Amino acid sequence: MEKAYKLEFTEEESDDLYVYCCGCSQTLPLHSFGPAVKPHYMIHFIINGKGRFSIGGQNYPLEPGYGFLIVPEELAFYESDENDPWTYVWVGFGGKHAGEFVGKLGLSLQQPVFRSEKINEIYDIVRDMMEHNTFSVTDVLRRNGLLSLFLSEIADSSDVAVKNDGESANNYVQQALSYIKQNYYNPIKVTDVAAYVCINRSYLYTLFQKEIGMSPQQYLTSFRIAKAVELLQLTQLPIESIAISCGYSDPLVFSKAFRQEKGISPSGFRKDVMKNGSRRNKEHLKEVEEFIAGKRERKNGQ
Image (cartoon, rainbow, N blue to C red):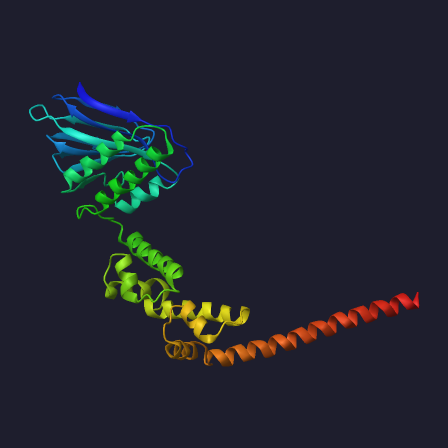
């Protein structure tokens, strides 16, 4: 038996991430669950006492500050200690990206256990979820926001890490590329990119060279110049405005980078575009005129 306070909610299955249930339990000695399965992800976090958790053929003895993940449709078992039964909080969650978030935390069936020193913070977050227990828009948004905070506290634990180095390296690069694409127009530097993905600059350089064959700085510059080319071709914005729109506060620095990338100045590139565009327009007009003329001749000959 256990003394538990449990809440279950009905959310849209299509949501990216939502709270399915949450609760707090003060268990009696040898209180257990399973072996059984859950239909959604569930994370338990131990506040006091001891117990053991089993999943995937592995057994984990746990104490305060430890948490464990139950994977959907995987047989799991957990039991409180006979002499020092545990008290824990739990959150069940789902959504289209639930599995993706769990993977980013470094948790999996093979690595279901984590440790965090933020016992009070995690407890307070779950208690806050339980206090906002209606189906009003206000409470739904708050619960799901608190779920993100709950997962962020776990992510902040130094004892949770992705073990697959290859996947981790690729993820760092993909996140860095995404950050650059979304922030190229800001005056960001490679150090900002590295800080965003939480690795140092030298390691980011190594990963970029290995994954895409160029440095982070080369990619950032090339991406900015590619966007500048689009603006030069499609707009009549001043060169200075294009420089600012591509993350360059100094037009001279922009012009130098553009020339190094394209072998021509921005203004020279625009002149070539206008010249070639004018020639193409004249050629197209001539083709249209010849087509119309030919059509008229055929019509008159009938």
